[in-house]
Image (cartoon, rainbow, N blue to C red):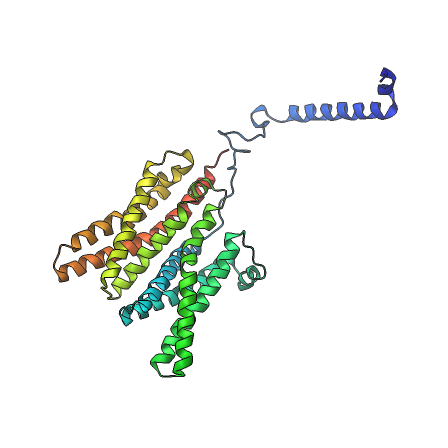
Length: 332
């Protein structure tokens, strides 16, 4: 191609535009102080000295929602298994009541955080299987319906009201609560693990199981504090304590800088406090109780139960707090 092609008017105009743009950029740069001129992200400064990840906007209702949902979901599984194995009717009734309380309180906390009830209803308009939040809302609705039916059926049967229909309603409710109890207890861990917040995302595979075991420890503790002393509860509580101790040890061994909020600052202390109260404390108390006389053993079990419930609640608050800290400290 000849040099004459580059002298055509359209090429000249383009060259002039580029030159003018370069001149404007240089003039603008001269007006900006040198220390604030660079607007690119860096490991030291973030982007415009702001964190790269936005903090979660959740308020106090969400940690409570996580805690209540975890305890209610695992309690429904205990109720269903206790019913199937012919365990104490009191254990079945108390577990169902914990599930029902969770089914009532969970939507209240969620709607309170959303701000308006219609926002909760809007989430039910579309089902997105790829969205943990969408799946979780449907799981909550199904679980609430199931545990309500189980409690209503049991109440009707106790008063001899339509006994055959009451028994059918109770059984259908137990099956639904049993099916959706575990998803309710675990989906919140999937939810926060799927975010871009480093401390959560790095533990995406740990959080569902961690929240499940934490919820199990809380529901077992509540049942024991309500006066249930079934040996199965002791073994479930012991297993939950062992698992929570292992989770705490894993967090302490982790050296990934993204997980610093789990070990430093106020969030780190909360994680440790929740972990100790959920794991080592009930583990020691339950182990010692196995070698004590019945009266003394029950006292130790109740102390372990109280520790597990408090530890589970603190754990939920701690993970949300760690998410805030992780977002504030986020860097590329």
